[in-house]
Each structure stands twice: as C-alpha cells, then as structure tokens.
Amino acid sequence: RMNIQADVKKWVFQENFKRVFPGAANPIPMDEFVDSQKKLATFMTASQFVPVVDLVTAKARAQLRRHFEAIRGLVATYYGPELPGDDVCAPSASCVDQLASAVMDAFYLAGGLSVPSAISTGLWVLYADTSQYGDTFPHDHRMDRQDPRAFFYES
Image 1 (cartoon, helix red, strand yellow):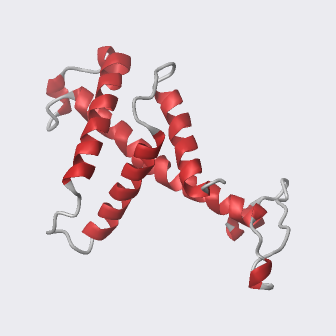
Image 2 (cartoon, rainbow, N blue to C red; image 1 turned 60 degrees about the horizontal axis):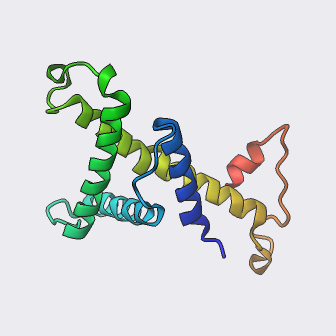
Image 3 (cartoon, rainbow, N blue to C red; image 1 turned 135 degrees about the vertical axis):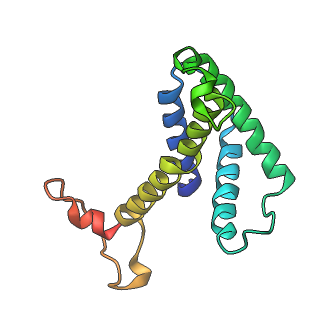
C-alpha cells in the first residue's frame, strides 16, 4: 500500500539528492528524512505562534544535526574546492557550512516540501475515488495537455 505523501517526499528527496551529489550514496535513510522533514515543518509552523518555547525535541535536533553533518561532508567533497575563502562567507564561520545549510533548506523546505505536496494533490485530482463527495469534485478527471490550466487550478 502506498503512502502518497511520504512516498512522494522520499522520491523528491532521492531525485534532488542525485542532482546535487551525483554518484554519491545517500547517507540519510528515507524514512528518517521524512520524519525529520515533518518535524521541522511542524516546528516552523508552531514557532510562529509560540516563538519562546523550544518545540524541537533533543532527539529531533540530534537527527537534524546528523543530517547536516552528512550533507556538510558531501558539500565539502563535491563543492569545497570551488568555494571562496571562509572570510567572504561571514557571518557564517565557513562557506561549506553556509552551502550545506542552503542544501538542507532545499531538501527539507523549499522544493523538498512544496513539490511533493503539489504532486500529491495532482495525483489525488487524477486518481482519487471522489464518488463519496457527490458532485463536489470532478469524477474521472483528465488533464488536457494542450491547456493544463484547469488541472492546475483544480489541484
């Protein structure tokens, strides 16, 4: 049985990883990535309302730290020689750290969160059994490849 949200997040992470670090083995287990991504997104949402309280557990912080260190090592290997000296990356202590942080943002938040959501919603529009909702949702929706706007607005 598929878990559309989690499976699509894993797939997007896998594809993004392959593009950023071609040929490298991914050191972050897929289920752990999805778990961390979910916790981070929840924390970011909740922290808008409760900024003073430390909402991220020690376990979640440790997991994210491990992921950062793994990504940092790959960034150093793949991109370190191309990066400028650390003095130009202030206030970050290291250009490698700064780029690793940007890669983490991309994997966990930027496209890593929005792309799976958009894909999941699109799959729902195309393949969900919406019969229990009456005429609220279109049945057997087909995307018009010549004019995909209706599909875009539906999803």
